[in-house]
Length: 137
Image 1: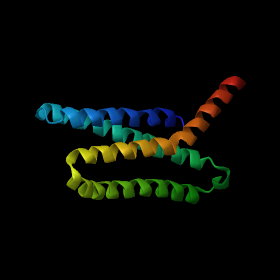
Image 2 (image 1 turned 90 degrees about the vertical axis):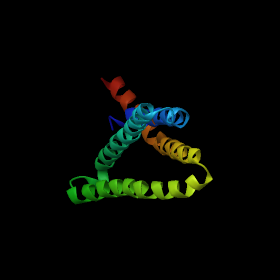
Image 3 (image 1 turned 180 degrees about the horizontal axis):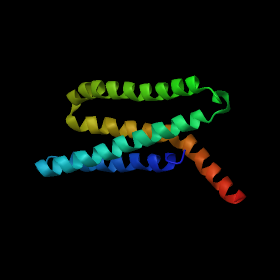
Image 4 (image 1 turned 30 degrees about the vertical axis):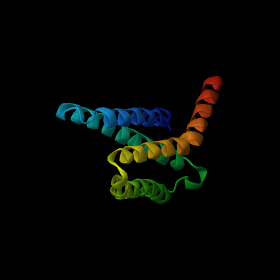
């Protein structure tokens, strides 16, 4: 789970980037493009790191030892869950946009906060494991 701590920091950056986009995204085409690229980088990068780290973490679980089929199933479930989120997000955005375009960004920000809350336990465990390995060495 080497990338989990790094990946869990980036949603905080995406929150800031979404606030910036909300405030300055209409200040011109170039500003809009640059901020969209920044938000996309800060949203998709952690998704890739986190799904890989969680799959690797679950892949080392003792119940999956030597069972490649079970590991593939776990990885598919994690990726499938991300795909469900990718499908439901625009659906919710379509509903939320009726209350105001800025609320779509707030919805995305809330989703980022939820992702951070769900990662706290795994990040805490990774930090403890890293510290214990440093003490041993």
